[in-house]
Amino acid sequence: MLGLYIWDILFAPVAGAFCNPFQIAPSDFRTSDFYPQRRTAFEQRLAELDDGQWAQRVWRTYRGKWGIANPLVAWEALPESLLELALARIPAIHWRPLFSRLLADIAHHRSGLPDLVLFPAGGGYELVEVKGPGDRLQQNQLRWMAFFDRHDIPHRVLHVTWQPS
Image 1 (cartoon, one colour):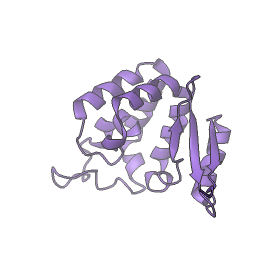
Image 2 (cartoon, helix red, strand yellow):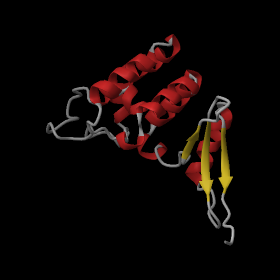
Image 3 (cartoon, helix red, strand yellow):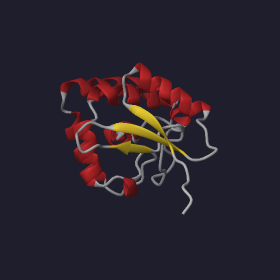
């Protein structure tokens, strides 16, 4: 969602960010300079989450950029039906802190996000981290869980056990 929402900022002609037209991301994408170089644009964009029109921007980008490489968009994992559910069920009050945290340090905050987004038949959503036998939460996952708690973002850890056949 973030990649769709900030597409134009990500690919903006920032001095030194692009050396050739085939780059998948600006050269400073995973550096500490990425956010500060675009701070004003990011802050203005995040403010749009308050006006209720942000979903239109996401849809325009989705339809206009479908299939074009973006380091924040996994097209194969983002069918229209999933985008529709996410925009309908995840409130902007949750997107804003998620986007802000990711943008603050993309290199470190992209890892540790939960494995799944669950959209129950009764409405709402829940972020789900799946752990198998012997697997435990890593430090980056624990930091995300604490972040979700602070922002009242629904989440849980699902422990899977093997059943003998």
